[in-house]
Length: 67
Image (cartoon, rainbow, N blue to C red; front, side):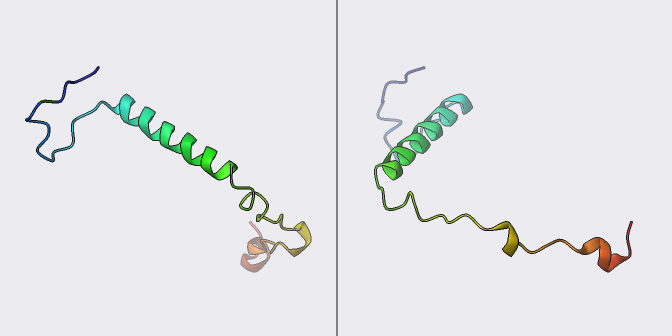
């Protein structure tokens, strides 16, 4: 589905593309962004795992009186 560029399409209006083509373009952009991020080693190690001991427990059942 290739469209030739005509003077009508060059007036600032975005050309209409199918949903499948839009999804392919978005996926390609996402893959490119991931490759750019993986090439930067500084961003890879900044996520620290949270300990289970410091996690706030859900005590809603105790507060509301059970089931």
